[in-house]
Length: 287
Image (tube, rainbow, N blue to C red; front, side, top):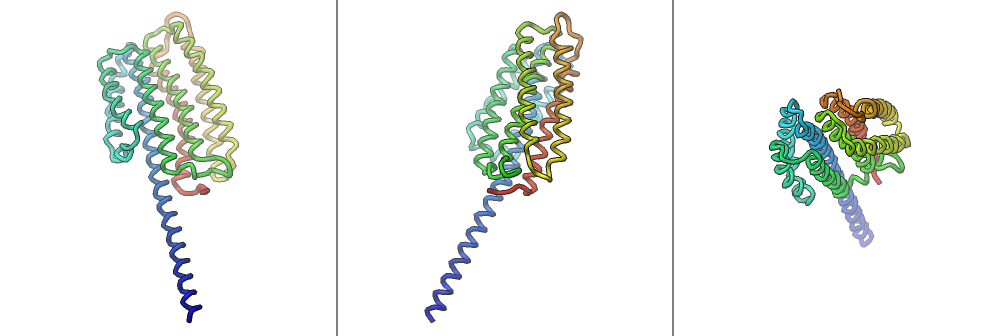
């Protein structure tokens, strides 16, 4: 009789252990799923703020034609802030800092009472805080557990991709202001020369990192995306070199420059989309 009792106790304990393991795994999967949704949401916030930086700089620098586009971006950002997804971020200090900073910056852009340099600087500080927030969110929701292969983490590729997009976004903002003003001042020339080198080096580093990913489900799409990134970045840098870094009156419309810059950024962000979609479909390997 005692062996039967002991056997029953052992079986019950084993069932409890299995149940707890399943429950913990389910909770982890739900947390990771929420983290992926928040990561995509924050990427959209960052993207819109980057576009607002470039557009508002062009408007403050004299291109009134972009005012309706700037106002639309402001409405889009307000909607993102008011969305249900954003409520989940309320416990993160960086998010609170952003939602306190944004209304003031929006009003300054509308009033055009800040210099172009200050407009760009205020946006860049805000966006840098958003990228740090995104890193914190990915850690808080255990996205570091998601792998693309035996050594490449989803979170690392996502952050690296957004950092390259931010370098491009900063280049877009500075160039948009230069084109709107119609002249490339000495300070702009120095900064754009630096950014041109930064875009080239950081994008090549990212593409080298992507090339090393050993995942048969992703290799083809990442290779295609990497080629598009190179093509669009080369086109942008050629425009900067030939049509922006010029002395005298520029003949390049800020809208044309903005659109070409945006195409380069969108191609970089496509790598982010490929990776995060793969993660959301739960094809990644857990460690």
